[in-house]
Length: 146
Image (cartoon, rainbow, N blue to C red; front, side, top):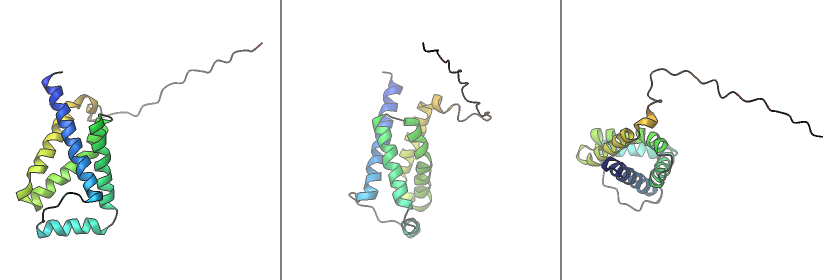
């Protein structure tokens, strides 16, 4: 196993663990949350007020984290987590600048893993693609029964 493969394995496990644990924390509240600046608290309160936002977000985090930890559907997990990671980074950059470390680490892990799985994403990042016709079905051969 090469060093880059080991690094991707470690990054996958770390990112998976972070999202699995913090996703579960959203449902069960077993980790204390640091106090937030006023603007950040207002935004989080608005998200909580709509009712569906946090269950969907935390459910996505748990599922994607579990996929990363189990090494199943890793590219799908990375796609699901990409907008979450961007929003976490922007939230900390604009609303809690003293707490940016987690956002920076998550972006670094996500980008590193996306690069590590770049062959899987190559076709998705193509500028032009035509829809496929589908596979041609072979005609069904009927056998005469005696």
